[in-house]
Image 1 (tube, one colour):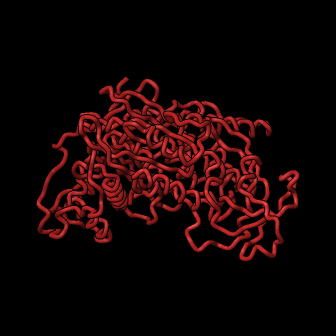
Image 2 (image 1 turned 90 degrees about the horizontal axis):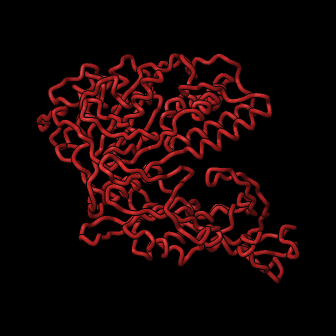
Image 3 (image 1 turned 120 degrees about the vertical axis):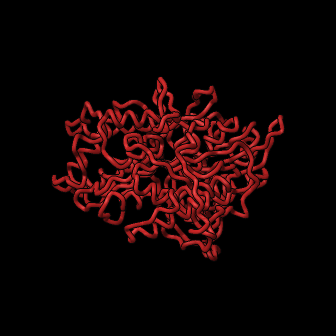
Length: 553
């Protein structure tokens, strides 16, 4: 209560004097919060915001996207910048309340119980509190001459220069009350925030965790310091909690889980009995934990989590057992990390062919560049994309699975495994269906990079293992024989014609996106994962071979 009490002010008069004010109830909530790799019990007095009218303005607070965080970590290593992080204490209570609210103090107020309390600060639980705090933090950052990016309003930029005269962008990222400063001297921005807000532990430090994921410095093959992101502590805590729950029923996690799924298992073919309401709730909670673990770096379970997520509304007992099997795999598997290596991959230009597209797409010969983008500063970034599809991977619905893996330089930035909405009659059709969203994602990321002031070097390189799709997209004279794919056909070819992308044929056994479309044997999984994920003694980088990636022990 000592932290929340300043949000209230005693009203000495009659409640009739509070014209235009709404009366609400306040209550205590008790929750578990993960912090420093462990769960902590937490209690807080919150407002019954469901009793108030919806504010006319936007009530919520936006947060920085996960791919923006990965881009920022790459940019820091690319331009040789340092990072500091801070956590604002009692964040919402720093801002003034935007609503006219009062309550009657309960027993938790001690000697003030029964008093009429006017809410003066943005109390947790009110509809407008998130927006009020974000507005106050935005005003603080704006006063330091940072400006929000148009691609992500929670990424703030300010032009800066190094002593040698080279220019770059100083960056601030906000995830509600978690703030990261990236600069040659990131302490300056942190001091500006500390002048307005009270920081937890009254300090800022080099982050070892962000959004629940572990961060660490490593040196790449060229001795450049770069960041890695891991969900090791998050998973360790989650596994401990699951084991504790299972132990109460005399159960335990399966052992010897060498892969996320048991051999030859597919969730759609599960015929075990359906879970009851309580079991369904538990299944959904575990899938939520696994989804966040993927976001924090465990992309080696992305496909399995995606397949199980298709059954959230009506899961089966066998599917819950497979979720436990995934946690058993995470418990014993190597602690793989996302590795944000800023070095440029060695790619043979012989793999890409050039053609004259003018006769086919006269108005698409130049990529549309945003006219309102900031000046491009710092070192440039290359984009590489692996794309694949598993034809009729779902044996029940016959839907295919799309897999996309996008790199900036050697850093994995975006990964996707998703069931296709349509049922395709051929491998060609599902591969073409996967290519279209891959190019859409590339276009959005090129826009984001430019709005972050980061130069983009040339077209994005796409690696596809289907010969027919590669020829239809990359060769101007290639004619489409299946007219039902004409929209995807022209969309993809126009991107090549305008210089946004270029496409190369990739060997099927070396397509990294295979990880997100097919349940592979352990040896094949580990070979592909070692090509781009950091794991203790393994350093990963692009290979001069056709595979695109290799590993060094």
